[in-house]
Length: 65
Image (cartoon, rainbow, N blue to C red):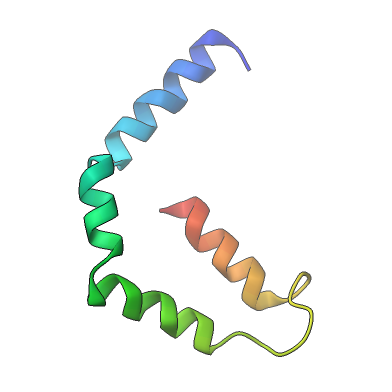
């Protein structure tokens, strides 16, 4: 990755991240934050999930936020 690419990624990151580390830690401790994660976990299929649409959906959600 070139220096320009890294600069672009860093700029995109700064634009996307709207919480400090402390704010994020506090948010993750809230009931609202935990309830969202539980909904995703409630949909987890049984057995090995490595090659499931459920896992791929979670991976896409994380990378697009």
